[in-house]
Length: 301
Image 1: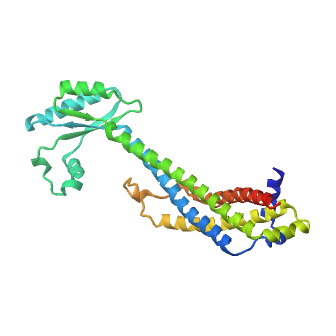
Image 2 (image 1 turned 180 degrees about the horizontal axis):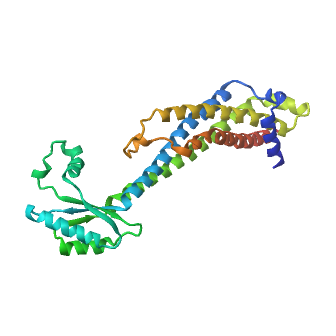
Image 3 (image 1 turned 90 degrees about the vertical axis):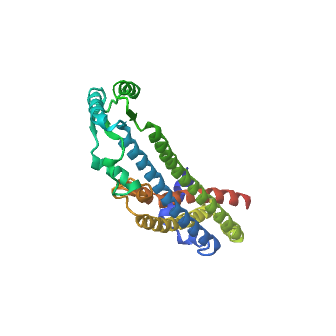
């Protein structure tokens, strides 16, 4: 713990003499910067995917959980009577907040994306749709189906549960996939930084031996490597995060629809989440370099 605190203090204070122990350029520097930038860029998109999936699952759940549809198919002479009977039955059902029959214009608007704007709804045997909104307590769908079957033979209740649950489950799995991707990205950053630190330590074995001869401790040498690689990861991740946020901003806005592809982005306080990527990448690099330095320096003893 004491060594970790000393390393953190040295990281913030800086030590020009110790920085000369680590080569400022070369393969390891480029590898650390590129890996941190690339992984931060991907992490921003993984987080955007996860948060967008969470919003979509919430939206689908809220909008569809309390909405149902009654579809009435009946001959022309019986359509109005069965619709009125269904409306009266629904208004008397506990748990139903409201029920209304959709107008011809509304039904045509629903069919327009598939059949075009000139569909003659009045001349076609299109079922009458009734929109049903539930109270927070909800109603008994099985009991309502039995009552509709007895009093309105042409009515079919669709409480959206059949296709609502798979959609919500898919969005929830996408959210988990996004967070799992972020964790894998963090692990990849740690692996790449560890490889770079091992390479740098091995390449400077003679320098480390000379430093030991003049009295430098392993803790001093390790702090130099940890500081340099942590700052490299921080700067690379910061650049990658900026590029990732810029790419997310170029995505089309959600607009009035709840489309997943057009809603891929951050909203409200979620914009704080990508700003956490650089410090988290620096923390991963800090731990990975400290472990690698301790192991390699122990092997050089």
